[in-house]
Length: 357
Length: 278
Image 1 (tube, one colour):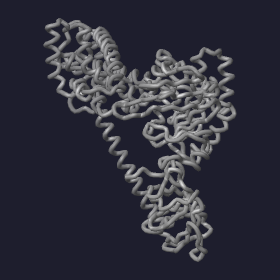
Image 2 (tube, chains in turn red, orange):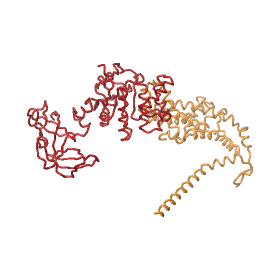
Image 3 (cartoon, rainbow over the protein chains, first blue to last red):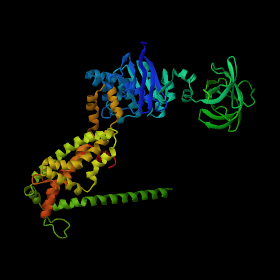
Image 4 (tube, chains in turn purple, blue):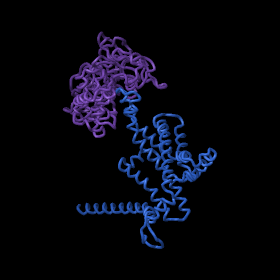
């Protein structure tokens, strides 16, 4: 376990009856960019603030580099942090903002100037040393924030929704910039966000949180391809869910009845006949065929209920079977009108067994 | 099309002219009493329906200083002002911190009580203050008059400073902490520079209110603690309009100096903007 940089061990934090962190246990490896992802109120920010020491957990311990820091005050934790609202010191120039952690550590003026220049070069803001934060754009301010967090070479970099206050285009640019800087320095980073696209693009691993608990931890591919719960599947990417029950099991496959239709899908180990199951389909895992296409396994007739034009793709709402609806996206090459018949094929259907009730 | 545009421009001009006319009239309306006093203080033999005084003189100022004892009175006013500012600012910092940074039960009620001296007729409040001060023998002392002034200065200080503390971004303090600053360093390097404009604004407000305060002074002053507004009022009673006007003009000088400082250093509307809901 020597390659673990940060460890949450059974951390609990309650606010009255609200449980913000419910026995949170998570290990973050050295040099890894770990994202805490979840909807607002899921406890990701509480977890981050337990890490900075701004919040004291009610139970559990937190380790950084093998050292128990649960009771260590914030200013002794040697962290770097980037804030959603930038949290720059408004009365200081860019140079003084970035130099602040060094001044606090009593570095000589010459060394300070050299390190500040170096940090500003890292975020490409060399020419803005004597500007005040209010004279900079949002993106520039956040780059100053990043430089300030990195200037004293902390063991850990924390990023609390750093891109949420920026406009969409800039957000995407900054995403890669942050990723590049973090990778170049090989620093361990914890990134908090509610934006799943951001999480997938940036992270080495993603920890998805819901109501104070960890839902799933894994690489972006694992999370997207193999969500372990409906919550994760819903939160990451677009998903369709269909309710059904198992009619028969035949070796590796089982037949599931969904809205009066029969689908053959890979069998679940724990599911026997009569078991209720939840089927899960990504919008790109549905093939749209011509209405006269020959049938086969898992091919069904459907009708276009609604088309939404999204530029490079078309978003269809389809109805089929008895009251089943699906959301599918396809490229804009072949355009189906509203009410048009279409044939669907499901090459891959995943499912979870549901507890009865 | 061109006609429409020309018409639009004419309407715009008309509106602009109207706006200027109104604003200039209002300014004149506000300035008229000043002009009156200024002319009266340097005019000699200005009676009847003359538009302007026939002769100019500075005699009235000499009289004001020598007979009216203005330097002594000015000294009293300033000493009382300084004490009132010091006490109000200290109160304002602590109370403002509590109001601005803490969630506490009964906040609204407490705030209402603190604002009470400003809201009820000053004479009512001053009567109560006077009776208490006679019992405590605080009447005709610098401290006594200054304390009476604090009752109106402190609410302003508290309002300005609670808005200042409320505006202090928690995240900026957190950032300073993460950067390695302990509580003391956080205070001196981050909190203090950020609240300094608020403290200055609060001090200026407190001082002007103490300096201008009349009713509370009238009921707590004595021979040793005559302040400028009271001295001027007494002179009115003596019936010498020219000397009174000269006193009033002298009294305005520090106020104008302060206004000039505010105008140059900070935008006055920004200072007033520090208030919320006054």
